[in-house]
Length: 442
Length: 84
Image 1 (cartoon, chains in turn cyan, brown):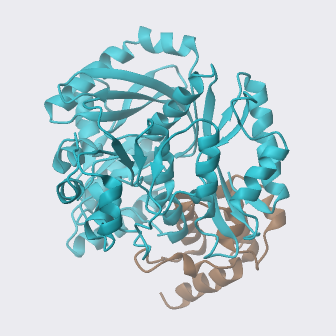
Image 2 (image 1 turned 60 degrees about the horizontal axis):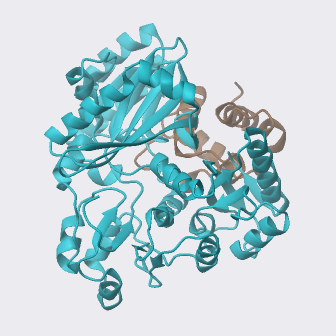
């Protein structure tokens, strides 16, 4: 890292939507404001990057009960008490909110000029924020970040690195139809939006009816002036999903940070864990890290530096697919690594996971939840050396005032040295939620 | 697949890979709250409904308020069939 100044961490997790050209034809998508609200407050997770003296700037004030718990287990960070998004403008990223804030008298002292802005992802308005608030930011320009985060860039990178590339780019609804038919004759395939993320922006095509429907939907957008670009890829039969995190300094030096194994449900992330030694040896033997080093050099050549998370997988037949896509930003796997960094001081490790729930009891507060976890011996503390370490409170609480069955999400780490005990703790956590009128969806 | 409430419940159960939903859901069940479908599953659900019920739903006009209960959405789908 470049400097010892105080860092201010902030995030907009659905970064891809801000990199996407609005004139690009899209796959069908049903907007879900409740899910969007949950994602908007995932920025609380950024506390994990803070060193003493650093600060986290969140859209909504950091949940005070959660902050107190985190401080009690050794985390040390400042957070804002003002609401940066009083009008719930969910379509605006945090940098736009900062630029347009009518609360600059409170924001400016919190940001303290000369602090370093350390975002989850570089987005439009980041440069203006640095200028307006006199902050430092060691990031490449938005156009570079946008370019290297596109699926088109990942697709082309496979050719640049001479690795097997099964994808094809289509530039019109006609091409989608013709290439889609070819792929479908061999099996199921995926239509990937250039800025899609796990859970949205990928569509699995299993029948000619679905293909025809997508072609007609894209055609109707082209008639309204949109242009088309998608990556089509045959559905590969994967055994393991994993990702590699590394950091490219402004001078072009690459530092490997971690490898995480991912448990996905369909295309959506559910859990990250640390792979065992034999898996790491398998990657080493397959020259995976040499390839990642080459990839980092190419990224730097194209002007990018900063955090990178590369999604990779192992197929059922044992073949390694080293590059699925490049995420030139921080990532959930990096957050998992940060939890491990914290736990390492106690010689512990955890898996990062989440519960997707809805609550029928708005009166059951987060404080009561933590107390219940504590009373049942489930809440992690360094003294317990095991348990559930809740990582985000607002993601669970944000919809409580707006819905009867309020949708929420709890991110947490299950801490234990034993795999069996992790399983047991997970089950206990689930039954604790069920007992307190939460419906669990995942 | 029957083009009625149960047909719709069968599709939700298949998408969620949860056979228990066949028992727990009924016409008055709230599709989102009681199935827990995420945005991607929702698209797959709509695409399956289009195939099975032989209708076309306008994705640009559609939002979650059209879903509501299973019977409410069934009415919406039937109307689309009559007046596309």
